Amino acid sequence: MIKGLIPPPGVPRVLALAQLVCRTGDGAYYICSALFFTRIVGISPVKMGLGLTVAWSVALVLSVPMGHLADRRGPRATAVVLFVCAGLAIASYLFVSTFTAFLVGACVYAVAQRGGSAAQQALLAGSVPEGQATKVRAYVQSSYNAGLAVGSAFGGVALLLDRREAYYAVFALNTAAFFAAAFVLSRVPEVPRAAVPRPEAAGGGRNRSVFKDRPYVVVTVLNTLLLLHIPLVDIALPLWISEHTAAPVWLLSLMFMLNTVSVVLFQVRVARGVTGLPSASRYIFRGSALLGLGCVVFAMTSMGDSAWVAGGLLLVAVAIQALGEMMQAAGAWEVSFGLAPAGKHGQYQAFFGNGTTVAEMVGPLLLTGLIVYWGVPGWILLGVLFTVVAAAMGPAVRWGARARTQSPPAPGAAVPGV
Image (cartoon, rainbow, N blue to C red; front, side, top):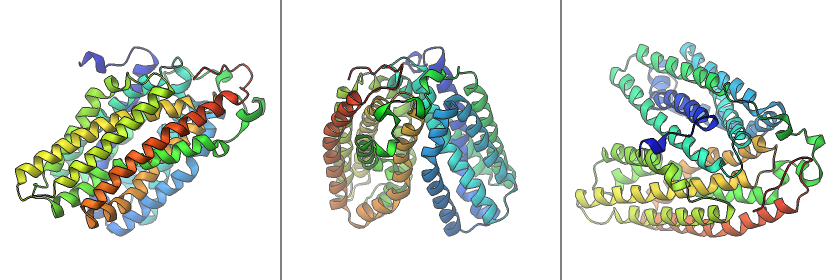
């Protein structure tokens, strides 16, 4: 099994290594950042939350222009520069003493993160053979989760020490990780310019912006609704467990570990079943149906006073959700790559990736109201939402596939069959 987790040599292995390195730094940073800024720097939780909301809102607005820049200047060079900028933003936190300085650093970090991720996806799409993007993306995602898991262990040590120097060490680690990841990405051959055509060189409908690609916009919106499962473990479940179940709150750490380890071990294997847009649509539906089933099991955890029963149901629900998440993600990756025109993966991946940002920004408030305050009916409604949206994804993907095959291709770019 371990051998199957190692990406093939060449570009896939380099991309996965870059992701493993930078997410190890991020994993440590995510664990420590809130306590550092509130307890060490002295920024109030309200101001910190406001600053992060502003930062990710700025990243949301600038992500597509950053992706367009990757298409014009080359995804490798853009990704390297943005990864370095992300590292510099983290390094600036070593000198933060005011809210303004924190806000500037947070904005640079968020924009560099989102833009760098889009550029990296464009580099992936332009560097691997057609039909292999989803498989390679699965290796990258597995490395992503492995990095977060390893990094969270480093962050846990810093929390245990709870000293300014320990937090500084985490920020230094994250800075070095981004610089190292930028160096690793620089070893990937740049996507040939023929695969990144200038807009004026493209013909007909291939010259349009992602915002004018109505099928792709619809698919992205539907996928964003499915991504509401992301804030569940971090935001909604802690409150649900503490207020509505008899299970111990410490079970959350075991649930997080189960989810993370499952993705590391099985994401590549799950993604092997996705071989084109039709299979991607099926995976999205089946995975989202599992997400819906998981919501029903979560709702059942509030019934009864047994901590053992509630805890067991919680672990079953997380296992179901993990499988659903992996299937939905694999299908979504294939759709995001398969419906994007050649040479425009930067802006298309940036736009599609904005769904994650929106889900993380809107999800906490929505899920808190829906689940924590409404209870069991809220869980059922969320499960129905996942299933209905997934059912609508199939027709939307077919619409996008028809639009793609009917659009005149850019000169020299082949349009593969769907």
